[in-house]
Length: 296
Image (cartoon, rainbow, N blue to C red):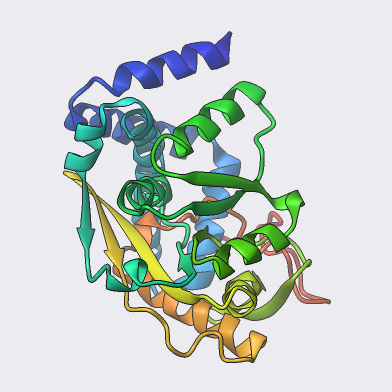
């Protein structure tokens, strides 16, 4: 019942002016900061590790802004997935040269976890005529999972591939000249990862970006999505001509370094609510364990 009510609210929000939806996101994000202390702590730890030279007051402001942007982006799924296509087109703006996305051949779109990741996916599904793939983990709540799947398959010729299905079908798709929307910048455990720096912190990082590009004979084109007062800006960055290089470790380190540079341009909009450093090198302590020492 609660799920049905929540989804009903999202369909209602799809009819409202964007400033109203965003204002509700400000209130919801502020509420989350105070009523979800465990997630607030994760954000604080991540920011302390990645921005150690930033004064505590500034990091605290970033933490609050992060949860506001997170809430706003979540509520924006209302109009991304339920508003008329004309509304979606009006609120999503492309920035940068899209040539690399349109040229023949497979494309691995590197789409980092900025809060607007679903807007980036929707924008790409509207813009490309080629089959578009991504990898997802099913949600525990069946109703929410069905809603997310339906929303992400709303436009275009898209395919949601479960992580458990393996990589071979996606490699074949890339070799056929199709597009893979890949989000490899979260901590998914030790499988298929290497430890490389992320903001100078050793971080378990998936090697899937360089592996898919190499095995799929595809080029890497990064896309970042910026939440704005008018909707979203979807920034297409130049294709990488140095990845894959044949060195998985070096390529993954390059990915993290370039991602960190983009994060510095809009630090409050990255997905700091995720435990990015939960997998530690052997012998390293759990950075999210509670400590009496304040996060200064």
